[in-house]
Length: 504
Image (cartoon, rainbow, N blue to C red; front, side, top):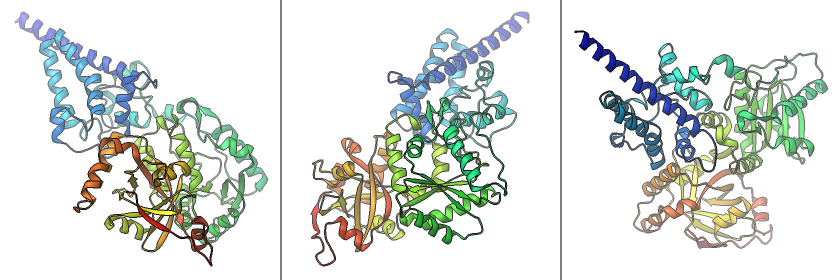
């Protein structure tokens, strides 16, 4: 009896030791995988995991999970290198216990991790204090410098990387100034100027030493930031008209002080900003709301808390140009999919998805779209263009010549699209290759273009090399007659001769 008891105790001890060793190895590798370095292959494998929005519990079970294949090669190698291989090595030392943990690992990755345990936002409370599941792990997706643990929270607590509401809420929160009706506009503008310099322009180590707004210092020093006091009792049309009048000048950007006499709660403020964006997007303008009660944060930095309710109003073209520049840097490294989802739901659609409804409908059924690239080209060409379920618009080119619409838009960033006798102005940005997005675009192409005359062309467009010749389009305004004439080099009495050709 004593021997059985000792053997059982030893077995349990070894079992717990396997779990401790495995989770410790994973904790170390996971922290290493978040170190940005050109030679850190773990980072290159793991970063794809952080591009998935797990707020709704991840993806549903897929048969390929049974084969330990998780969507793409990098995602699969990430799981194998950080979890499976270390556990396999430990199993050689403790085979009996290791096999049971390997079985758990397989069942978890195949059936439980995506929606039931690790990525389940409805799993919270006491269980997440011990097990690295549910909201504990999802906080890591929100702030990648915390909650690295696998299965248990022990190592995060031991090495002080467990997230805590007190710690997170204290990171990079600017001083909030209570709005007083007696304050003068000049006093308010001084406070906002101080906020710009001390908060928006300051480098944040949590953002990789980037400031919250990397371009605001240049705008301020160039004198392109202006203040425009607006009161809440004005209706949206009146406010929009005031903003339009302001942008008839040469303002590069404008901080709009909203409701300077009374405090405006966050919900009302964001509602009015949405209405303004609905009105102004046809003018190519976008209003970005920032508010003292806004808890939006990137890697623990509260990037939109401000001393007063403000609307940062800019041309959408300017915002997209800035985004294009920043995408070539590490600025967005700490942004998660859920961060982008919040931004896009609030005002991102006014930048890249609010194409006119009739254009979206036309795009879903029309096989070819007519496009003119740049400001020097005088010919509309035809191209195979697609629209995804989330209203993102893409196209690829078969011709890689300097005269293609793709090259012209890549050079200038602008173009015209013509449909049903109408024209819209678009901006185009060449996509950085991403395997998941590329596969999705391929699928949309194959589903849309099934007519016999289109299939040969589309079969070429979905080949791997053409993933590097993909452009995403952003709506930049409806083209009125005078602008179209100027763009195409014509005039009222002698409009430009528009020629038509095949580009695909």
